[in-house]
Image (tube, rainbow, N blue to C red; front, side):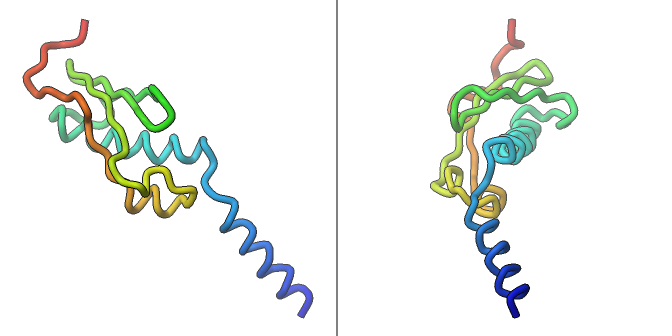
Length: 102
């Protein structure tokens, strides 16, 4: 009985701990790569992502670049599943006709 209670408490505490900054960056980097690959018409492998601010990321690849931000409240959630499943991102400056970065 005590083991069951302790196990349940451990699971509950772990679930409430929230997402780590490192895991948040991993999830957002994957989302940015996916979106930039679509926007740039470029393979994900050819895109480099860099964190710019707390919730903003830059992407460069195939001669194009853009910055991306989370556009839903779920992007700042402390729960990993919310960021992973419900966070939507968008570019705030992508121009498909831009020339190559210098």
